[in-house]
Length: 135
Image (cartoon, rainbow, N blue to C red; front, top):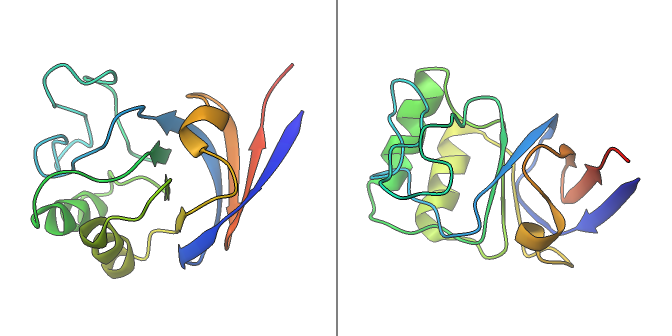
């Protein structure tokens, strides 16, 4: 079964991959080891898991202005997500997506944190997000 969500493409791109969904706001500054792409935030639901090669879904960004640089470092080290999907855009995360050219979609016509589950296959094409669930 597939679900199509339409949103605003902040950074356009076309990618497909496995979703990693954080139900809570996300920080690259305090939340991710930029050398490994592993989530290091204490108590995070995905602590110990990697963001590399994933479609990273979270409601919105949290943290500091350093998030932009931390996302750039992840990309420079080859451990960044292949796309970012947010309910609301955070200006610092938008900056990070722009400088790394990571496709970013936000303001979808449905709540991505509720409609996408970790492990779902997700295709991002501009502002369109196709969620493919195995039955």
